[in-house]
Image 1 (tube, one colour):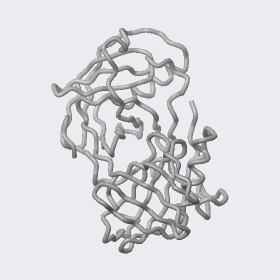
Image 2 (cartoon, helix red, strand yellow):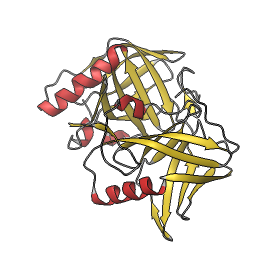
Image 3 (tube, one colour):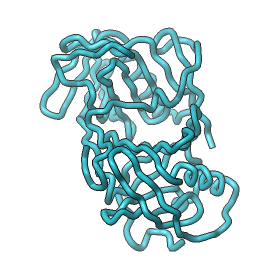
Length: 292
């Protein structure tokens, strides 16, 4: 499993400085977020002020235009600015955070921080271009659910407001395992049928796969808490990577845990700091599901 190491730089594309918490980067805005509204329901000290309502919204990054050349964003790219003046971004590889000052239709990002992960060539190129484009003062223009951020040099980023997915009825594929201040990516080489996932039912149940074994159990949702009951499932042994992933997921889905949904991302955090993040994905067809 790859462990994300978080660093702080003095400029948005500058060198490395003091380490900060990965969890801080993964803490996103509250508006556009489902939290504590039950299954199936959508739900710094300074305050960012904006005449253009860009804060507290989960924005899906659609594309980036640099020097007149438009490039589609990697899948899952997003940007959020919370009402307290903290921006977080993801462009397909690293988690990026920065201080955000919002005045009227102007946004200025500073004091950036980012994880340091090896990325694919195309994703790495997009991420570097996006980080560079977001460095400095930006002008925000909102049209319906579409947002355009324009840099001083004329480069633009196109975004679309991302509505929170429903907790119940959505297939959630686990992509990150959290243990205190350490976030670890789920191994990319897991067999497709062993990628951990979970689906909540309207009847207060949850089912899925931990990384090796399939399971079904009770999940009681009240306010911002999900209480997981003892699961029933298969008891197979799998290779070490799959079993290690399973143990981490089990630790997060044991007893009471808090949850939030921001756009298509579900975060579950249990007592002691164990947790997972998962992304909403299309439900597999009946024939493609594991038989466990």
